[in-house]
Image (cartoon, rainbow, N blue to C red):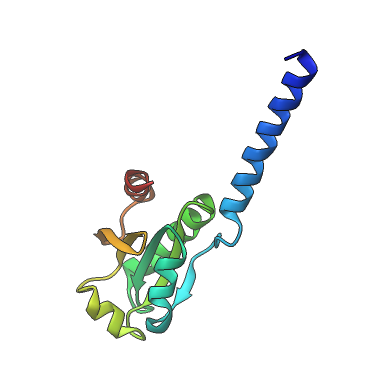
Length: 134
């Protein structure tokens, strides 16, 4: 293989990797998606890795966690889809998943619950949790 063919092959490989990356992030939300009981199963099955923030408007720790979830949704776009489930308005899902305290984060891979956290945890702790499952 001469230099030209080698260079062409390298360019082709790089373009294929770029294309694969753009396909992987297309359609992934870059901010948390409000979900309801009716949309919950579809949401956790639509994306390979999802995190659902179970919260309520009156919950102070939930309001503290909200901006952190916004940041993580933007930073992990294409790898993690974040949903927000208002437990006051969506009690069936909260009950089905045993939500007794909020905020609770539910981590799903391939539609299956793989982890959960409770409380307004700091961003580095949540990033560590995400990395465990990526």
